[in-house]
Image (cartoon, rainbow over the protein chains, first blue to last red):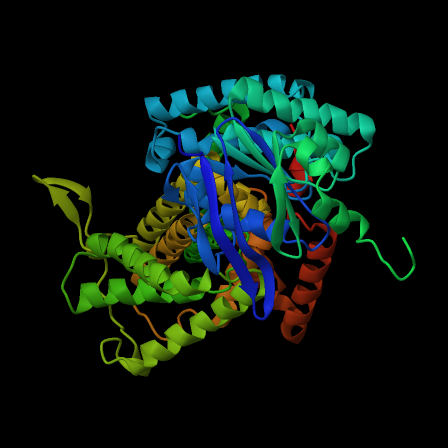
Length: 260
Length: 326
């Protein structure tokens, strides 16, 4: 079986700086795969290349066998690979429900002109979107917040809103950008179970970039570790925890001179 | 089809009655016939301002509507004078031509944001003026004058639009036409803003990256909106040319482009009918201060600064302040 998403020899250079060097890995359907690494390891850049927000220098990303790198972000989203952002990137002046409704526009059956004239199809779409939005908000436990202005939500809910906006597009692969950053233990565990249920109940394959080790070890089926733009390890959480190169990258290598 | 609330229905009805019955009646009673020309101008400037308002809606400051008004005015004038077309055919053609030009110009410049887009549009009006001066078809500095009044339209013997040159009161006819165009423009604008295109525009205005991540083709929507915006500008300009029966390179200047933008600011960027009110207040405000002589511009500018300082969301925010979030 071909993997759902394939990252093949992806390299990104900014002038002389190599952000990602020859990275390859596969994401199987219905997996949760995390990309981890210290600051500046090239996680975000890789993420942006997979969602076509930045072009690759060489190499390609395949989704169900067709290339999704070096396209436009909206094209990739339409194919079913949708990224989320960190909490500051939201529709500030929309309510929670409005944000979800607008994010569903890819499901629209009527044309823009159809909406203008208010055709039957367009009216059905609008009713559908509203219903879906309510269901999705209920699923994420945010139904009571649906009429809140997005900008007035607390941080934890903002994250969830970001995921909700991504989910509303009905994706097959959801790319989550540091979903646990800046959260305390309880909030993190809540988010972990939420992300899991997105995979379990919605059947969405998840690729996430994250700093929080504890969360990553709990949630991931597989982990890819980056350091200085190179892939240094790949495996299950257990394998990664016992990988010598990973431990070196995180804790520093043993230094003979000071006898550690 | 349209889900209008009672207040909205009442509001639009009273606007229609005021524009088409009460104002003409007041002018009849008071004998101030000169008001027809003023109000006709307001209606057409409001039409062009509606376009500027729409570009604001995708988060772009457009100070170039004068360019498209001028393009519309010239297109219609050339078609009527040199091509012998009926004015009523040249009117939509002027809008469409302005929209085509907007697409060609928009392709490179709509990538720019904020003050950079504003700066480029500011230059546009001057570019079109200079082009009109240089091209042979636009007659250079002499412009196109003595444009015939709009001819009549009849289908199978039934007169739909009478020949304006046979009318006793062309001012009234132009007033009605301009108001009809304005009402139609704002109805379209309202519908656009409240349909899917409007929602997509709002998502782009608030965050273009997030919008593209949910699959919005932001480049296409930007271009579409800019084309519609310029269509309104072209229509307004073409109608203006028909009323004054002439077009010159100086018919619409950079100052006019700035005014179109100010109309939107003054009325309120958050309200579809903002540009309509803004145009009315700005136009009459300027005229009312005529008595002040050399202090006219000074007083006017100070008042504008004060208004924008204390009512950043425009005049309409006074009435809607309490129920903005409802």
